[in-house]
Amino acid sequence: MRSAPFEHRFRVALHDTDAAGVLFFGHLFRHAHDAYEALMAHSGLPLDALIRAAEWHLPLVHAEADYGAPLRHGEQVRVTIEVLELGQRAFTLGYRFALEDGREAARARTVHVCIEAAAGVSRPLPESLRAALAPYRSAASGD
Amino acid sequence: MRSAPFEHRFRVALHDTDAAGVLFFGHLFRHAHDAYEALMAHSGLPLDALIRAAEWHLPLVHAEADYGAPLRHGEQVRVTIEVLELGQRAFTLGYRFALEDGREAARARTVHVCIEAAAGVSRPLPESLRAALAPYRSAASGD
Amino acid sequence: MRSAPFEHRFRVALHDTDAAGVLFFGHLFRHAHDAYEALMAHSGLPLDALIRAAEWHLPLVHAEADYGAPLRHGEQVRVTIEVLELGQRAFTLGYRFALEDGREAARARTVHVCIEAAAGVSRPLPESLRAALAPYRSAASGD
Amino acid sequence: MRSAPFEHRFRVALHDTDAAGVLFFGHLFRHAHDAYEALMAHSGLPLDALIRAAEWHLPLVHAEADYGAPLRHGEQVRVTIEVLELGQRAFTLGYRFALEDGREAARARTVHVCIEAAAGVSRPLPESLRAALAPYRSAASGD
Image (cartoon, each protein chain N blue to C red):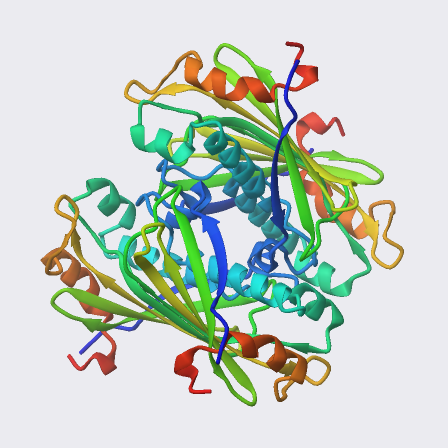
């Protein structure tokens, strides 16, 4: 049994667009990261507190996106985010960007590892992090 | 008699900050513009529709900000926006950025003119725009 | 026989970094796109002229990056860009981001299609574009 | 006697522009700061080293810009930067953004103070900083 994906919403701002009239592709990752920050804050592990505590960090080792429909200035976008993989030392988040009419405009995926801040070396995902992410595992994650 | 200033809220995202640990000063203008877009959408004149209609535009001719307290990652910020001046051919918006405890972290000001899109020349502010902005005139605007 | 990859350089600016002290992952795509714009301008097909001509566009349908070493504020970065695939209706660019000591810090890949601007439908890559990209085909592209 | 203003050049990138087709006003400050970073690096006091040394910082307390001609995608821009004021505890930089034909497109101004990093209190500008900035004092600065 699992809960629904986490939701985050934003409106495409003028500064998100470029002279081609639609969201500049690179800015999608800014919005994906906003959704990830919102999920972590909602789960009691806000990224700002993690960065300030400086015990362990969650750097990205991979990011990717597929673009379908263009995202136009003013459009309301619903981001749903799921945990696609929750491994021993890494986790993968999946994001879907949907327009108001429900059409999917884009997908993204980010892969994060865990680093012991002092030593700068990889470490297993802390239990607090596993607990925060577990409710958002996707059906596809096989758990 | 006048209504209260318009409000807009945001949370300082990781990508808003820089290696000095606080919001990069230039990003304040992105958030000021988001507040302006929210006010215009709320007033029935969303900027995206204005840009697509391409009859008249509202380019900025001046922008400025004063920075007090630093804006840290994760901080909840309340932006209040008022119309400081509503002239024949230009208007000035004033923004205050307050932290959760009410302290003012920054102020900004933007000055906009109105341009006939086809001819590219200055024109008086359309009545629809004056009507949209009028409710947000500040006491200091002397009206 | 093929020519060398195209090169583009940048210095990690303060606004590229975040409170974690290194380049925010999403900004890598901004720099990748700058390298792509530089290649296109160098090849006689500057993107700004293409967008203004509005005959055909080259929207991205996929973007991805792998992050190795962190990119720190002030670091000089050399981007090399190659054409990994040059198909009938799409092309793929590959980017490597190297530090001054030669170590690879990141890789990225973008996939672009060609769209007839008026009709909004896919079209074969124009010959002028094929000619502009051909010199940068990678050995791995099998041509 | 004084030397010429410091120069920095950039090309308006696609991601600098917005759906209105020209540089988003807020991004001008990103380019102003790039010019400031280039001046500091050229003067032997690179900002990245100052931030890492964490002895004193130079936060902005004010920023402003006046916009004249629009900056279009692909345009080559020459930024000249001068020290408008070099006080005991603050300095003011002035920036001019010129198009290739020499026309001025925009001006900006930033005011910086000096903060003792440990105590977080204002301190006089260090001598090394005064020496780095002095060559770029404008005629108007009255020195």
